Image 1 (cartoon, rainbow, N blue to C red):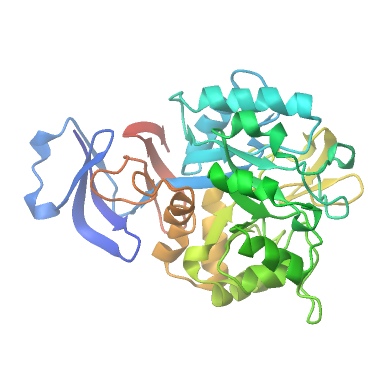
Image 2: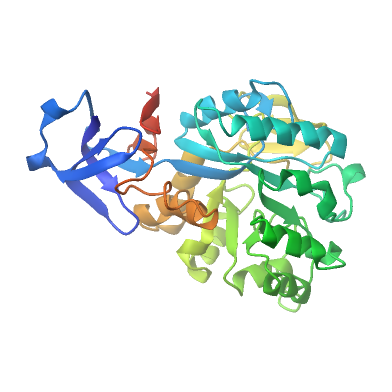
Length: 378
């Protein structure tokens, strides 16, 4: 058994001090410091007064460290998993791009295989972003590969796909939505110019999620609320890219004031240039130019991000002045609950997986554990 002592433990509703976490692959106990017997543990980690958080869950990420989910090499996802652990991420959903279908199938097979492997951050399944989206609001997706929604194309991968992005105005019949709901695939609305009415109709039929709110969708207008208006006027879960580039800090504050905090999920939507130096990169077969914190296509379109989850948490906390435990929940228990995995990940509690992160007040990552195994230490 192992232990983490001298840490401020971040729970969903409070921060617990003067307690010790005992764990192996799972959390065995949380005991008062005065009752802790050091000799019962094989390893004891001193948090040195820093925070101990549940591991972060990134549900939308295309790549980092020079690799992309669309690369089908056997080491691609393992490379991502190891690098993500340095940013506090202990599990993630590799996210695809709008590509020609013959190129998407081997990617889904790659993800399926990697779900059972134990290297770095754990792979929970796939987030399928495109190709069932709007041409007008494609963002950095390749227009030539956008197609109409067809559930037969994804039927063989219903065990792998956990979230799928669709433009609701492109759905002409309910069979696609019904297939997703029957297979417990989360329907996310995005890359869309849908009217408020079209979006609310899709929500009424089972859509429960919004792909990177504000980005790649028609802007909020007082006479035409659109998808943004529907997202803010309903209880759907909303993703936010809190890099202060994709979403202005003021808009982040407005979302925090408008939505229940449990309905906000922080994501990175990062691309292969994440955790690399500025310069030329690639996304979805298109050239991307990275300078500072901004990645753009040749035509100036913002292309994904170079954001990491630790920075997303730090930014949102600064921008909103929300309590630390509330912001941490947006990257831990909130996504875990939506994915139906909150019984074993997403929070620090007895019997849950020992996915743990030691971090300081500025959200600098000190140590990351996945299933009780130390993957990273600063």
